[in-house]
Length: 168
Image (cartoon, rainbow, N blue to C red):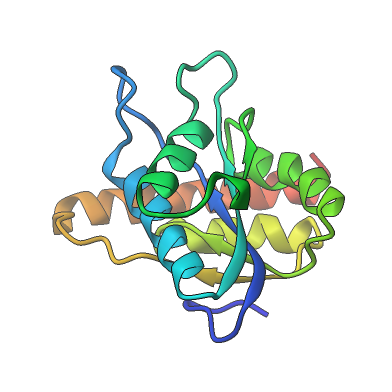
């Protein structure tokens, strides 16, 4: 059900947000994810892109930055859906589900970084989402930063497992 790459097509790429800079520019992670989704679209592996991420009140939201980057990469605006409110991975999935249902999207490709993929997959699985994973290469990210990100994700996985166990 899950994997590191898309082996076949999916109805949509669900791009999980990542922080933006205070001045409204996309972070390297947000740019990586958005451009990876645009590449999947360009290759015909997905027919739609669902950009997810807020937080509410942010201007622009992570979802809007993803949309802008995908458009600049050649994806037509009509092929991009936006969920602008999610502030966490769990919200990315939960708030995207109604949009996916509305557009009759049953097969999703989660687009996120490799260090974030285990937690994203755990949350998607708990929500009953049918998905595959596709992760861009983290070119230019130093090993020390990658170690810190993997450690952060390890802690986050424990917290998320507890929340899922508790039903929250």
